[in-house]
Image (cartoon, rainbow, N blue to C red; front, side, top):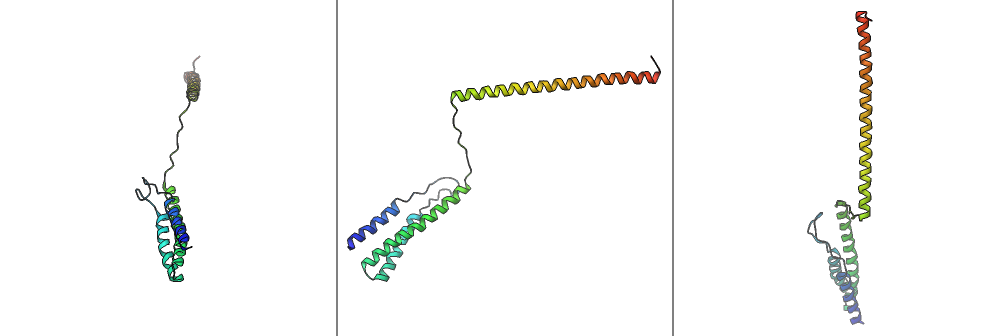
Length: 158
């Protein structure tokens, strides 16, 4: 029974420590600092659990049970710390959108839309320029008429 329990504890320790996700190395928040809190927690929990199990049970079975429970609890606490760290790191990262390449058909459609938009803008600018010139022409004509009337009134002419 003791051997089976010992093998179970070792298997549990290996599975919790070995299967924990590895921390990413890289730029940004805490650059180059890997986080292995799950592994550290499992190892520390196993040690503390083994000591506590030995103190409580005063036999090998108590030590192994304490190590197994300590490993599980330490891994859970370490994993929570890793997740908290990852969440904090994600909050500090800048969003960079991914641009997908367009198909040739989509590119042709976009070029056509830009051409049509440019033509419409050019036509609108031409209309605005014609309207401005017409307004100036009307102002000039009104100004000439006013000048002629003023001249006639000033000199009493015909």
